[in-house]
Image 1 (cartoon, helix red, strand yellow):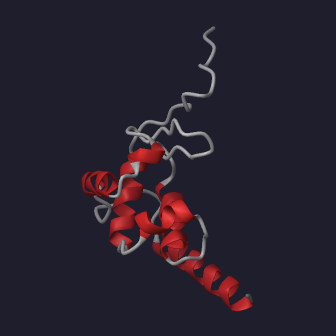
Image 2 (cartoon, rainbow, N blue to C red; image 1 turned 60 degrees about the vertical axis):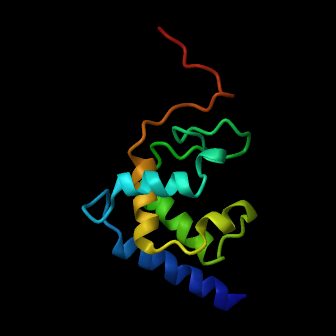
Length: 120
């Protein structure tokens, strides 16, 4: 168990050390959009990245570094979420960064099951 925790810490440290603070030329949001469609991300996370599924996180506007880290953890089996095992399988680091850039570039919005903001 300790070895797995150590390995997870190493992956997280590498992701943060090697990842810039924002999209770069290496991150291709258009390619990420194509991958998100191919991997059926919209089925759970919504066509605009805003999930209508209860308990399913919205990804629109989420920080690219956060999405990248989570996807690496799913891919490596370090974060156990059965619904994410297959979508993350076989993705390269570049693919993951592109998907993260795509979702980070979408405008965030409240989930449909949340109330609308009040106007003043």
